[in-house]
Image 1 (cartoon, rainbow, N blue to C red):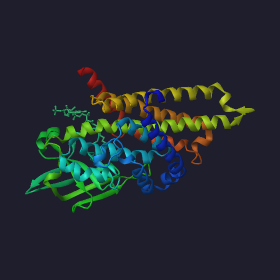
Image 2 (image 1 turned 135 degrees about the horizontal axis):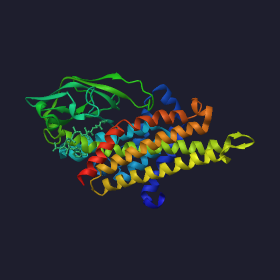
Image 3 (image 1 turned 180 degrees about the vertical axis):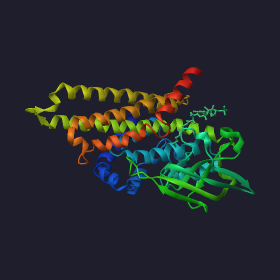
Image 4 (image 1 turned 135 degrees about the vertical axis):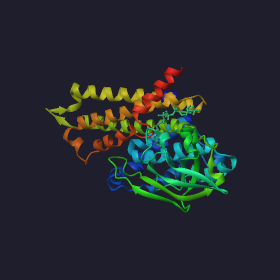
Length: 380
Ligand code: COS
């Protein structure tokens, strides 16, 4: 798909791919197994400008575009989907809402450290009783003097245990439901804010997923992000961008499954020759590659629409739906092509399947993606 990319985008893609292959690839299986957060890798990615690719240099970013961000998340996820989601959740879900909805003061205060990667961000919308029904959250924020006082528990928060800055959502007018939610920026060491239970997951095990607990946590009044009671829209707009990040992560997983399968099919000999000579294997590879290319184009289209200031909610949902199903499809086929070797941890195919599954679930399940797509169609 090189013909669609600018020289600058291709250079960025090459640089991140090289780094991911040389530095992340060799440790990816081990950090996944040990559930080790790759702090050195994240720091090195920050030095490469990856933690703020799509944001202006005046805020510490690399001044590139969203397509470049998509390419970087894919390139990283090709070798390690855990690292891919660390970058994606930080960038799409924490940096982006502050950049889009923040006041000048908030941008100057928070973005330079986030975009340069000195600090890590997370996004806390989900609660035990508010997953797909994001508007059902129970966390509250009450204005007391010049402070907002937060109470409640968030869960399943990507980067939760490692983040320095959290973008969180709470009820400010409980009886108004989605029209009574506001968004806030909370810093790590604020009294009354702590990390709760860490989840033990099927995949993406090198990224942290945790509870965030707020107990009479008082934050400055000026940490309200966006307008009062307009937080649900901040969440929805932010998730549109996040879904393109997850689609990019899924592309990386699919690509890994395809590339490993091609190598294995040429090396593995059965019945007197490489298994790649069998049509059964060739057809699987052909289907995997075709699904990948279609997913890439959808993700590129959504990213390009975002870069050109167009509405892209439907395209982001389509990209995430298609790319995540492609990642699971390709990972499943990769195991099949590897046979028994695909089922053991000596090879990466089983890791790809475990990592792929979550892309069908987080940042909006694929059932919610179908609702978003059809709602847009019926409105058009
Ligand atoms: N961009 C801007 N505004 C949006 C929007 C979008 N993409 N999607 C919805 N809104 C607005 C609506 O226009 C509506 O505005 P008004 O109050 O002015 O009418 C408001 O948000 C509420 O929308 P809606 O009535 O559609 O909300 P629902 O409670 O029915 O929920 C879904 C809609 C299901 C789409 C939403 O809850 C959702 O995306 N759920 C999944 C959440 C998710 O992805 N969680 C994962 C988090 S991982 S970080």
